[in-house]
Length: 152
Image (cartoon, rainbow, N blue to C red; front, side):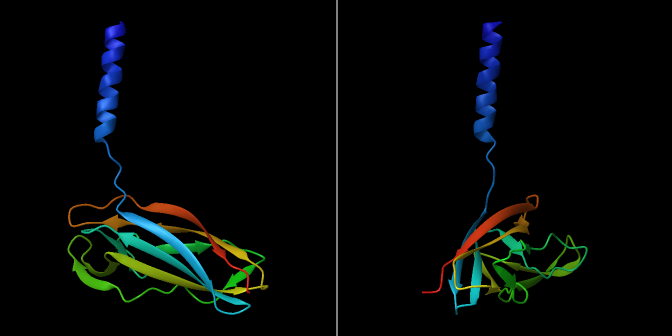
């Protein structure tokens, strides 16, 4: 019986070593105060070669678009929509539509109006989907906290 348990444990460890979780996108966050009551939050995706994430502006019936949900706060309000650079747009045979996406890296920007010159934290979550030419990974949701420095 001990041999069977030892063999089962060894098999599980071996299989676990081969089951690597793919994570081709790394997210980073920063903020810059532009005045006593204004700041810009930067959300950057660094994407491994061969992979891409989608624009915020993907039509219904396409892949999961990148989206941002910011938490309500007494310290700030959003000023406009989250901005993104111009996406690469190509026709996708699987979805039978033109789709905008980003490769290598993309920097999203969200302007916020601050209620005071004190430091604040902008909180929220983002949802995205990453694909390459062969497959797509399931959509992922990530929570973030971005520190906005106090006005000096």
